[in-house]
Length: 111
Image 1 (cartoon, helix red, strand yellow):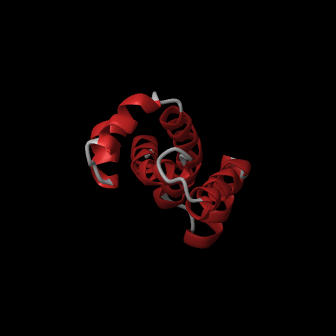
Image 2: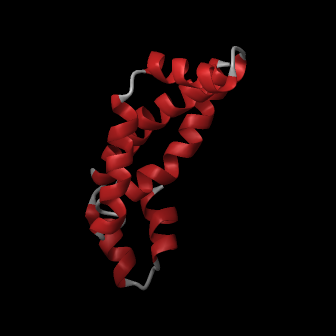
């Protein structure tokens, strides 16, 4: 149950981290709401998430998996977008200079 919840959280955190990194998407309309969502998720304690999901879905493995997933999304996405923002901008600027589009920039320069 813990492995499933953490794995799902890590997988779902990757796109959120890309949207939250200010050097990948320079528009504040993209990274500000992503950061707001991540900050909101990280402020909710994991036991409160578990209690909410138990109230919604009943006792079983699903509430635990969902609570760990949401908790992991906040933590992993924060670590990822801070790591993405600390990338050296030189190679990314070089990719832009030779004509790389945004998808190529993310796949080959960021990831």
